[in-house]
Length: 141
Image (tube, rainbow, N blue to C red; front, side, top):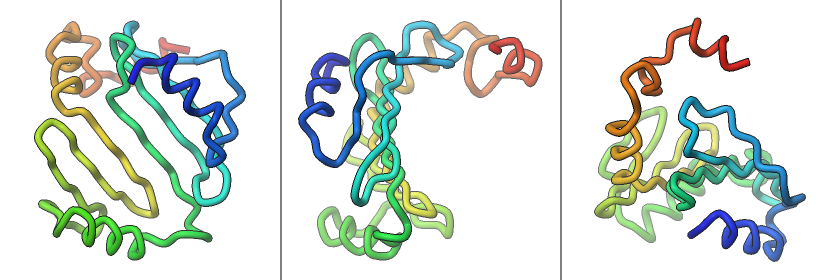
């Protein structure tokens, strides 16, 4: 989805309290944007990350008082089968270029891995997220 399509969907979606613009990004790469919004009911916060105006990472931090990790794990396993990776920290399913992860305490992430790999490969060496030094990070403020 595009940035505008996600904004429009969030305005209609009762599970989010999307206030609209501005979209603020402190990402080390300039071509990415993030929508961060409060949720309601079972969702505490939603994070929607875009590259080249395309949604490639969706993170939903769920309310652990209303939905627990094991209920989500059971639901996702019933729907998608056993996770390909399972550890005390997370469960991961992979469907082509889409990675679905359930992380503790209760965080659901959908990621377009092809776009993520393109972003890492296209980043200049000092700006690669894995290479960010404390000095570079502090310089962003």
